[in-house]
Image 1 (spheres, rainbow, N blue to C red):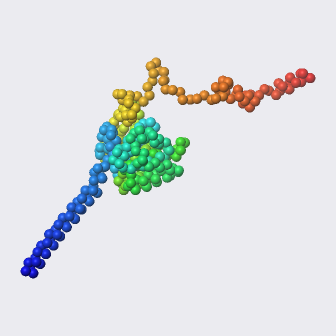
Image 2: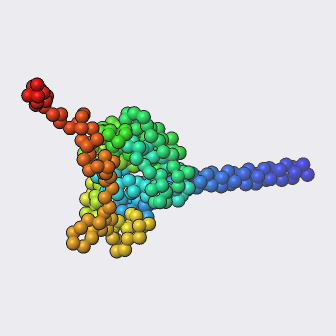
Length: 296
């Protein structure tokens, strides 16, 4: 009888051990799925513009990498970066923007779908702090997208600085460690080195283009041309439209924003009419002396 009881206990222990082992395996598998889910769920940031996303092999901006957007002013580079930030916000992720030129206009960003409550704007005081701030933000892993704007220097009159190869490697390494996307905005006269580069260009008011200039994953030389309505749908441009229309007859219908000085509006003579003793030429002293001598 005692042997039978011991046998039942051993069988029950084996069953419980087997069930507990299966539960542990199930938990481990579930943990693996949870760990892998965010990477599969947000492996790339798609801008929503199919022609632009198709240029990159991953079908969008790949996470864990640094990508350079190089272009002139008003070429669509900043708006393209804002579209990537808006895509991350749709997935309820956080983003950061290192605003080197201090020219990011939050209302314009919100018009492109950016959630300002999920966007951290950093404006360094010194030029050398810009790359450092982007590296720290990207390496933290808290942001799905970090934008580093180096199109101009600190302040409106700052000079553009070129990103050296060592700094580019730090940025790429930070993006890889943090698992997010790092977008670097540069000018053609000061491009970065050693990273994937997309070049944006304006097409004479009719639209804009994006070209893959450098990519280790392939696609170098591919180009997409799009109308402005794709980048700015809120403008309501029909058939692509134009950003600036010129009236018939060659007359520019753009309003004049230059304002004449108040002194010109008062008397039409400008500052010379206001201070003749200081700004207008004085009469010759010799003529005055000669006139006085003749009177005596």
